[in-house]
Amino acid sequence: METYTARLEKSGRILIPVAVRRQLGLSEGSQVIVKVEESGALQVSSRSQAVAKVREEIRKYIPAGQDLAEELIRDRRAEVEREDEKAPRP
Image (cartoon, rainbow, N blue to C red):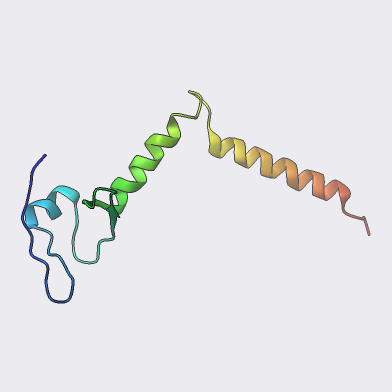
């Protein structure tokens, strides 16, 4: 883990060092996630890193070979068929 020093500007902004921006793939306008830990430490990550971390965590609960998107599509199609069967015929 590398450590960098940054200065807090009067406006409250912190300039993220260029080496860190490159490492995180950040450019002007990039969204970042700033997390304040209980210890008071700040954790900064790119939005894409945060999404990847959540996906990795979710994968732990999905059985191997199961396609949740396909399962959702099947469920929705079955729901539409049930609704069509209930609908009054003109």
